[in-house]
Image (cartoon, rainbow, N blue to C red; front, side, top):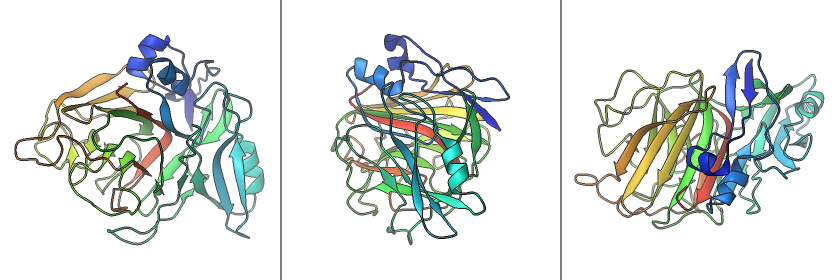
Length: 330
């Protein structure tokens, strides 16, 4: 079982690195920090406009719903909340509600004031509606508390097609997700971030801005056999401005994957071993240009996606513990 640690950084340091959680394979756990990721982003002037986690609060004062589960036996639903303000998920409530049957995660709630919740993705240009993740498939320990992550397999996906406050039409933004390298594949596309709305259709180059993690290499050669971080900018997973062998494969069991995009000329990709907390810059340079058109400037539409591509391509696999999106370049 994965054990999740949380660590505290100074606001200035963490606003640059933003490791919101440290996930450790083992038995060590540490109490939650008082200053949580979205508090740090706010102090740097790049507020969270979306904050999603099934494991814990992402604001120090947040006390509310984290996610909803639906019971297979009778179709009933219940919300799983934090145990305390700024605390961890009440997984015991899920276990009690789902006892003797199975449950799926049907909504991942946004902890920001924007209400950018993630329900199960509807049908899109690439196929039919998705299904929810098995709510018990990714158990973990956080601060001594049992919690559950989101275990994405092909056919699972979440999307907000009416998001507010997110970057649009070349505005700057940043995002990170805490994921893992145990459950990955080469299917399209294990994404978290900005996508098309109000429909799940491919509307052209530059209309997405989402962080990707998996085994898909779209601009070879790639370094090693993966998995890699990339930016899904629509009609392309970019590890750089085309091929970028300096973007090395990430073999950690648990990974922090970060994308920052100024929306006009450049973007950056960073990864880290979530156990140690440091980040490596895998790319920091121009947005795709030259033979790649439509990305300078960007044309984001402001929707939010998790686990699938912009047109609802849903052949991917991945694990998700938490993620945030900011308005402004963090």
